[in-house]
Amino acid sequence: MRGVLTEFDARRLLAGAPVVLVTTRWHGVANVMPVAWNMPLSHDPPLVGIAVHPSRHTYDMLRLSQEFALNVPSRRLMNHVQYFGTVSGRDVQKIEEAKLPTFKAQRVDAPLLEGCLAYIECSVEEVLRLGDHYLFVGKV
Image 1: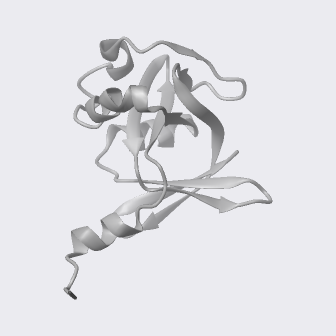
Image 2: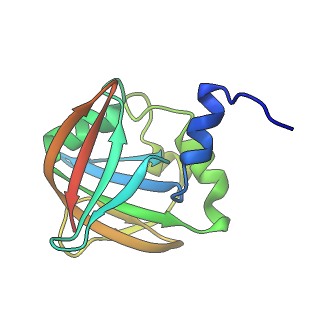
Image 3: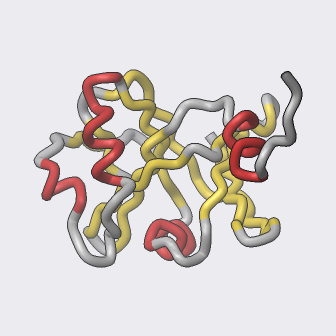
């Protein structure tokens, strides 16, 4: 059976990357936000991209800190992923509130979340406005 996809369903079909938890820190305050719109951009130099709406607290944190970490959550952290997506870092210290342990990254000031499958530390290389979102290009 054929049908016309809604715009929402079309976007869902194109979201092939795993949800990552983007962590940032600015002036000692840490933040985390789930991001489904993430992608590899280049092998050489190694670049990744995350799309963030300017209304999000993470947008401000990325602009100010100019660095971030991608944390690939395990199944065990799915409840945390959901929680992190429902509250704003402007209102709540999400990582502290969730009592999720962190550890220090090697190259950036953003915290890394215990229990994740992988971590990618990035410095912001470029920021591009693309429609209603901004693409933060991170150099790995």
